[in-house]
Length: 461
Ligand code: URP
Ligand code: ZN
Ligand code: ZN
Image (cartoon, rainbow, N blue to C red; front, top):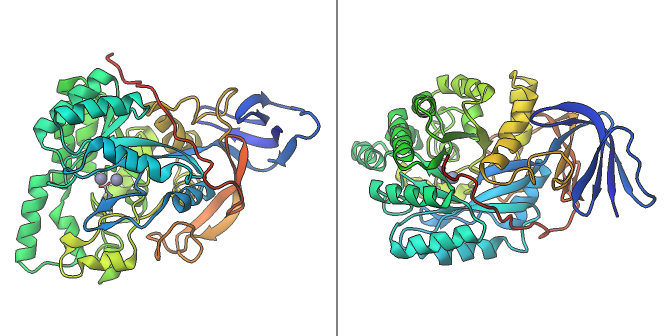
């Protein structure tokens, strides 16, 4: 049976027009004014609503063994929370630790998602050790359709790689035509600064930011960009948080380096004063790179508006209050991460488009289309056009509400954005033509999500 969405205003990264959308067999088969459909077609009235292509979150952790614990999430809950918030595709980081086997790790993550995710999904494969065996396994993983790598310049001895391993990873990525995403902080400096602070008795969450200052992130960004340049690879800086790191990335872009930039939801809306709150309230806002001095927020917003920041992800990585308390005696033991997969679209729409002068097409581009293009999903995802998957968000701009842990759908006992107002939310969300969400509730089929096989799209220029 087909599905017809009538009378909405379709908004994509490039255009805005009134029209209908007809869906058959999971894909869009017609877009235009005055469409009619055969008897038996389900019709959704989109009058007064905006219709966006399904949003894509390019930076998500669901299964994550990290900092002596596991991220408090599973694929069923996270994917349904994502859909309720308008995210129809997420890209999860496969993060085996340095001592684990890469291919085994890849299958662990795939098995966790398969049959449980309600939204479609793909993976970035983290390279946490580089040797001949891992190189062969990475080639096999790319052949399986996972065409992006992830490296950590921080988290020494756990996820982190050294410069030699970064070099070989980027060389392999360039040869295979895949893009490498990178967490850019100088691991050595972080370790030394942590030691100095702890020795001086500075153990609270307020010392997390001073242990990883802006210059440490700028150094990581510069070094990653230089390695990308020298290896002829394509690179993507994840969760860029501050002006000096942005400057480093822009300098590389200006030199013609194939470098792309992601910033994540918390860094647009929260500053370091949240992590300076007393006790566990501060711990709830510990992530890396850390929340920054407020002056950085305006810089990130303007870089997003002009496209210097390419994409907006979440770095969704929830730990609950009990887990955060692992760091009561030392800020270095606080599990790093904050949830956000459910709230990204509504918060960026509210504080960007409605209140912040963010162009609505740039909003769609940064939260959907650009990620689809960079990660080999376009035009299957990130577009409203004939032949694309019918992943659509029928958006109610008249909705008014506020973010609260009491009403969220992900697994956690707090929300880092508690009390933030929202002006708008999805009223209907479809995944490949099937209605999965209506007005804040999951009404669809759990486990319907598919693994998205991609082909390399960053070959030599
Ligand atoms: O604090 C963070 N960002 N936690 C998740 C792991 C990472 O670095 O992305
Ligand atoms: Zn990271
Ligand atoms: Zn992350």
